[in-house]
Image 1 (cartoon, helix red, strand yellow):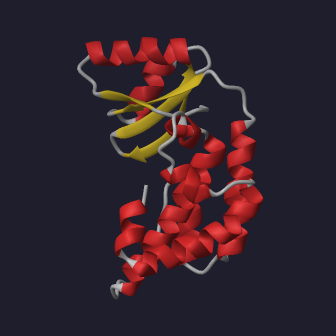
Image 2: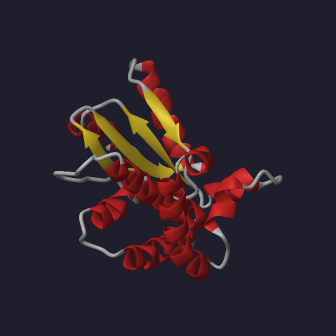
Length: 181
């Protein structure tokens, strides 16, 4: 994630270095090595929330700096999930250092949550999803991404059952790859 950008664009590499210099000591390892490792088990490590969130943040920050170097000026910024923190840095609301502390703490805290949950993206309105969820134990709407796009989370068995139920109705779903839900 980002290796080719870092090799091809010095501005991206410098911004990545800046963010990694702040994240790495807090994380206890090099986030760049986590992102770029080709060792066995590297993908599983990167998928762990405690590493994925800082990796996404440093990538997003470096990407924004690259766009700025091309003359892109942001009239407004927005983000989703960990992207909200990168958006706050770009908007000048948070410093890179404050954001580094926040993303590392957030990733660690989320990693400590019990495993076993699952998330499912559903092409449905929130109202339609709530109706289907009425009989589902421990499942709730986790995010409303658009008028006809929601994410539900809950126990794996219930999420699998609901995915099949939606598919039978012709509703498109996609299981999200997350370590915690």
